[in-house]
Image (cartoon, rainbow, N blue to C red; front, top):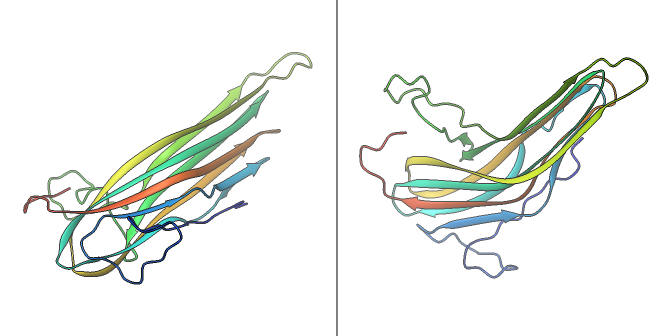
Amino acid sequence: MLVAAGAVALVLMAPPKARATHQPADKINVSASTVEVMQTQAGLGATSSGPVTLLSATFRNSTPTDLIIQVTEECALWTDITTPESEAAATVTVWVELDGAAVPVTSDANGDGVFNDPDDGKVVFCNRAFRISAPLVGPEVVSLYQKTRSTHAFNWGALNVGNGIHTLVVKARLDASVTGIGTFAQAAVGKRTLVVEPAKLANDAEF
């Protein structure tokens, strides 16, 4: 069940309530949100949020340029397990899309030194698999619960982005699964920022 989802976009140097009527060219763009996105699985089974939009930014290049894309976010996980045997798992996977296409982490996914096989650009921001297997004699029951929240970041690079107006979207998939009786798993994304910075990398840059 998706409890909450949303994003609020802000353009750098604009008043918080103002909306720009045009995109300034070749400028750093910023987007931020504090709206919590959450995925929960209570009881046996698995669930996924599917692709969720976390942030977006629209910008304009006057000439072809390279981009440094920085995403930072709070990532929270809850897992609850109990004896005699159960497992709870939660994961948040993040990627960015430029004009509808995923930006790869590397264009040399097979590591052969030839940059012609880009990966899917997906990065695991947080992940936990919490398991217990301890059959007990008698009525005793052991329950273990973990709740964590921390901030994580990752950078993507896009080379030779053509001039014109572009849209960058940060997406995520939140997954939660449980096995056994009386277990619970939950994943969430909290406060987050997106910074898109035009850059001039070396002419022979590859990644």
